[in-house]
Length: 302
Image (cartoon, rainbow, N blue to C red; front, side):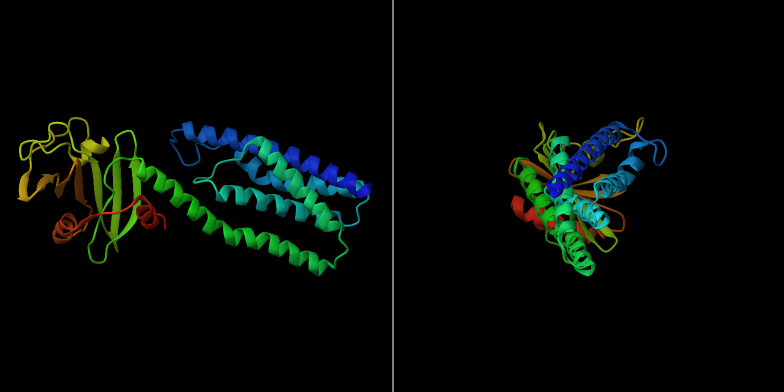
């Protein structure tokens, strides 16, 4: 009965602590999401250090509670419970595309189960070396598994977003260049893919064919206008372009030669970044390849 009482006591403290810390995490996450920082750290409140120190405080409270109930291995039990709870939270986060706090009820369940498991492990009459080994295994295995699970989760989430976009998913076959990132904007049905080679980087932007698209007089919005980056009072956008091949045009935007390629009901922009040879941009525009959502997710999620 003493063991059951200790399990209940430790589990209750773990549940309360985990729920409280998760509630602070939710509040801090919402604050940061709404905040527009003017200085470094301006969006963080007192909750952040509390969240970081909180697990140590909960572990110390469980240790004191176990000592008060006469447990002879209170410290190993509390530490193992903290590690087990952290493992459970880490595995939960592995299945989230971004770091998202678990619901308070789930955090409470994880905290209760984690610290109860710690009490059970601590109560087993094993040598301290064996308990230390168990702690190391509990600590290292989830840490080793987390990157693999999290990458698979991100790939799945990206693949779904790409599939729902409704435009062809284009990459370029250019020697030495590889996809380093791909982002979607569902409101504009816009796909942006970045391809890099060393310090050089070019972008491929795919949008639905603009209304009124009639080259060479009207070739659609410029890259700056697509992203809303044109400075106020700047020169008017140049919408015209010149043909360089079937369904292939170029246009000077600022200091860059941007290639535009029509693919059925979509328009593909190939935009050079800094230090990208013009020949590489032309090669990219001439060797655009459509890929599947899964393949683009695989290329974009390192």
